[in-house]
Length: 65
Image (cartoon, rainbow, N blue to C red; front, side):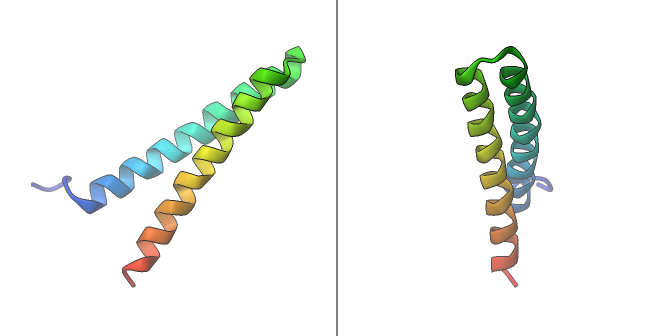
């Protein structure tokens, strides 16, 4: 079936990565605004997880070439 396989997994990683970056940025900004270190740290961790997913996506895509 089209849409199942390695390309589908790479697209899923990209969407999870971008979603984590957006949510992480919003949570970190909210933590900064309200002065909550824990919420800000959780946002930064989500941001880093999103960046790791995007980097993993790019590395896997370039590995095939």
